[in-house]
Image 1 (cartoon, helix red, strand yellow):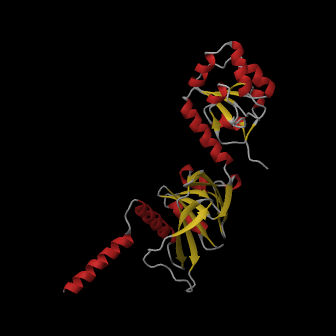
Image 2 (cartoon, rainbow, N blue to C red):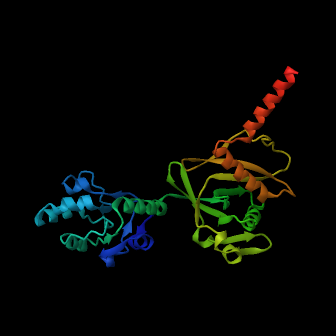
Image 3 (spheres, one colour):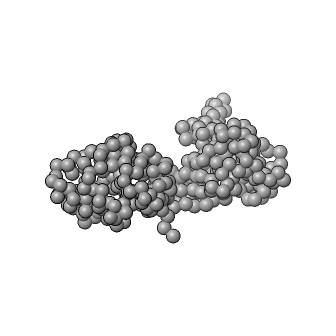
Length: 310
């Protein structure tokens, strides 16, 4: 089934209002791209993307107003298509009178915004990309640690939710427990959010389901966050060797994005929340150009050189 967003959802979320055709508010939008139909207005429509929202700004209106009434009708006939989800007019510009009857016949709502055209374009595109993007559901606990999106993964019972609970008590925030929905907004960025049924909830074995927002307040939860690092909690049974220095880089591919991955062995008595905090801070330090492993190796090289000289 094709994913879609209704015009009503768009209007409710963004600073946009329905100027004409409120009865068509349930019209579906299936493309995240927005068209500025400059060439179409001049008569070139070989590659006219009629399935997209059509955005009309000051430039388009200036061109339209330079034409006669009959020419404007012909222009709007090209612009309006049975598959066009909506026509948006920016900058608070008045709707051309010739456009209204044509949209009413085809059931196309006319929307308006007082913002400048480039801002309207960006807002609509960002909203639709988030709503219409392909989604992947991944098992794990998604938390924000020091402003970074951290996904805790690992086998069932390893302690992901318990670690998240301690992180919340330390002032960090929960995005999703048990399952997180991921979607890509560009070639480098993944966004994670909780399925609606799991929002604000955390399951602790032996305790049951708790409502994090009710217990810890609105500051303890967040609706969505960019995924920056995956931390894999692995039970340490003595059979797996781990990188002692942290020099090896590991990644996990989600869609087309390579997400850095850190493996942390889990043993009785280890404070996982403190380790996750340290892993997040160390990852941020590495991202800013500081690498503790490199610093250690340089110190070691200097010590070896000094010993040789002595």
